[in-house]
Length: 483
Image (cartoon, rainbow, N blue to C red; front, side, top):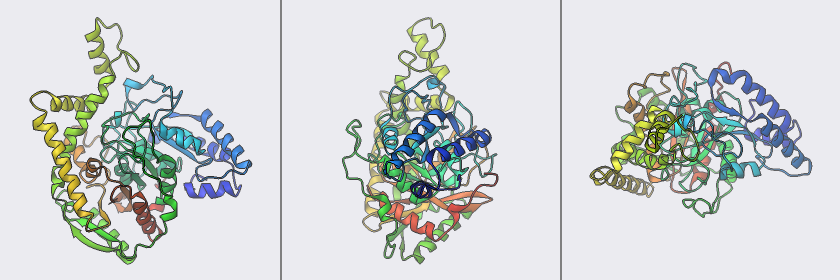
């Protein structure tokens, strides 16, 4: 059962081949057996899962149907879940039980999805390796000595190891697409505003976006269908109709214009990954796509701009964690200032502290214009590059990451080296565009992803291209040894 995709689970439940309760018990036992190797979960919710599974079976018995009804999933541990610890991978929120459900959690629960637990993540979603979590690093199921990517590394490792068919993630600078690439999954970052951020603990509010992680584009379409939609509680949510993502999966790629930016193939890209990307291009050309070289001239400025804007927003968002209202509080504070200093100093890990300091500096008087304002101007130039490119092509294709998964601890002493792993993904967040990573092959036994970007609200186009590619390749079907 653990090898079934979301789509296969939906068909199996509809045909009464098994019940949601049976499937849930199988997967919970599998998590208990295998997750100690991976550390992909922070909290398991066995009682809730079995309760939801029984309720889903009862709904099906009454004739109700639905792709997510009775399907087991997990949530990245920054989606608030009522009465369940929502830690954000941090000591700061280790004791926090959310008093409400995030909109994404509520929508998926209403659709009948079964929540198996909350997955591990980089602390406050800050990281590309899932090594900054207060609960320890997550291991990559393809090689337990390597990172799974971050910050949604727990969700990615759990799905890749077949502990469950799909999970939610969030993407601020590549945190869905990058771990998807490093663990052989399909991961989708929707258009900014497509999925509600209400109840999703913020890192950088103008960049964060929730999305699905699964093994196939078909499964991502099913999960995104349940997540997407306007939410009046989220002021950045966009009131745009949600199409039927599954309905467009089988469209022909004949005449599809694919742009390949020349800037993607610089010296920083592993030549073996470059070869796999070119192979993906050839596979899509065989399906009728037309490929042309394009240019994104301001891409070179993306990392410096992102690492000013994101920490600036983080320093503001994380100021609420002060030891007063909720979360970690230091023992025996001498006064209010001591309470603030020690609660934050003891509650936040080094990477979070680093980014708060960078952000506070960028926003400080005398530096705001030189750093933050300039970064926002560069952000606009990057968006303009994409708008010009999409006048010529329908989607943009390139690598998701410059390298395969690196060894645990290999970049801990050099944070900038880890930041550079986001070079291909952060532009989509800066521009607010939808992006998808899909499996494209292996280098030294480690998975490699190819990234697709599309104009605003064209998630259906990305899923269509990825699905057609997956009908003609088998990379996405490979399973890590031992899982």
